[in-house]
Image (tube, rainbow, N blue to C red):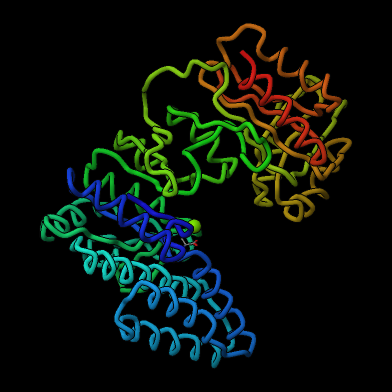
Amino acid sequence: MKFGGSSVADRAQIEKVLGIVRAAAADDRVVVVSSAHKGITDGLIDAARRAAEGTFEPRAVIEKQHAIAGSMGCPPDLLDGLFSELRDLLRGIHLVGELSPRSVDYISSFGERMSVRVLADFFTREGLAADAHDVWDVGFITDSVHGSARPLPGFEERVRAAFDALPKDRVAVVTGFIGKDARGEITTVGRNGSDLTATLLAAALEADEAQIWTDTDGVMTADPSVVAGARNIPHMRFEEAAELAYFGSRVLHPSTLLPAMDAKIPVRVLNTNRPAHPGTVIQAVGPANPNRATSIAYKEAQVVLTVQATRMFGEVGFLAKVFGILARHAVSVDVVSTSEVSVSLTAHDASALKTALPELEPLGEVTVQSGRTILAIVGQHLAEGRGTGAQILGAIADAGVNVEMISYASGSLNLQMVIRDEDIATAVATLHAMLFERG
Ligand code: ASP
Ligand code: MG
């Protein structure tokens, strides 16, 4: 059961978490994975940046954490050891005046190390016996890639052995997001990475399911802040969720699903504020989704590159050249659409793309357009429904939105189009009404 930063933001939220964990622990053995309290990770990184720039100011973040622990009734000295380690680290960063990826991971780790201690202490005093664990003490040893570390091969056995040795009648509250490498250096799996910690541990422990507790009713048909009528999606397949996660659908971190997919463990996304809501179950196979589409997602502020090469007509290797150049300049490409003499593609890193332009220009006429949005309609039945594509494009046209690029692979779960950023609200509302709100 993974609880995100907003689920453990303050006393009111942590009391909800206690209720949810208590109810689950009555029937099953549960493992809790927690994020830092909302805002603490940002506060830590901010303090570290300022320390590197010359301002040693550990107070704000320590006071914020101290206030949360105090409001939970924790002993006043519960976190003293971590606070002084944190002060020492910030002083060190201040002295050397620089912030390495290694120090960023080290400083970031305090958020989760502090929150699990607060939760376990509170749970125990409320009658639900619990222990806080730093994840490296339960077998989660990673490689040394700071900022995106992954557990070392074979970590599953170590995790299983560690949990076998823990008392079965006490709830383990484990740090998300962080790890340690084989030399004992602290690492992180990446921002918002507690979900990934949870699915990795679930896979290692062969859990019945991984629950991601957040602040929406599971995964929604569209971003509720854009579409008032956005609805919960009861069931999704892993592939559908993976397409959406890539769009940063605000619910799941893109790599979260992989461990669960590999281990065939369902992932359930649930709402801490409405625990009775069934949320969304994501699994390999499941009940068919009766809708033509499952969800709408988008990614704004993209750049579209077009290379038009009349001279290349009929020549072999044009696309290979274009992609070779882009790869050398580390341009990550998302949507691609080609014709005989041209290729259009989207990228999000405009400055990387800029460095590639001098090499692309000899290939043909190159144009770059910015301020574009990739709009994706995801659904396992998209390929089956005759006329769905025509209806989607027709509705968009009727709404006065110009589609500049389309990509849809054979049998795909994902119809993607490129529109202008300023058309997002209109396009999403129109498609949502057509696909989800009418008959
Ligand atoms: N606390 C970390 C972050 O803010 C990890 C997480 O929240 O999942 O990025
Ligand atoms: Mg978070």
